[in-house]
Image (cartoon, rainbow, N blue to C red):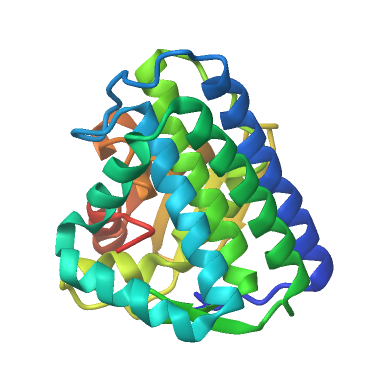
Length: 257
């Protein structure tokens, strides 16, 4: 089961769920005030409607995986048949719906998903794309994707976005999923420990890894999250690295396949 080494308590899951709900509400407030969802976003070929449609479809897939895991095989077969076009086709279908219909579907789906993720045991496993995941992992994964696709919408509209402490969930996924970056780049995963020190949005410092690690990454939490979600190139961030493997990581950083 894919869990990134994530092990959280029920209380921590409740905090993460509240943050997931808040992330959705922030994006909802932005897009619901926009009458035109045909504006293009940084994702090639995707409008605002495509971004919301993608989030809606992903939430629906998680609900299938949790409630009827045997039916998730059909989702996997659809994805396999569509190949690299799977996300585009899903987004195209959703974006073709009237704005009001898509908005209500997204709202209902994310409310239903938050309730479902709160009801299952924290470490209950269910199928996902290429793996099995737990509720403990899926909550921050949904938050990460909502934040990342939300960033595309904020960028499309030229609206400044105030970073919040919710970024810690995204940053944690980026740190503990470091091996995914090397795996996706078809490179050996470094065995040496890494130290990550990020400046949080409220003036605190978020730290992972041993203090004496030779491989080190530093910078703002916002820029780290923008990098690992591939919303900004490395050169557009304030991130610095010490050590050959840390340098390479920043070049190939990602938090999803």
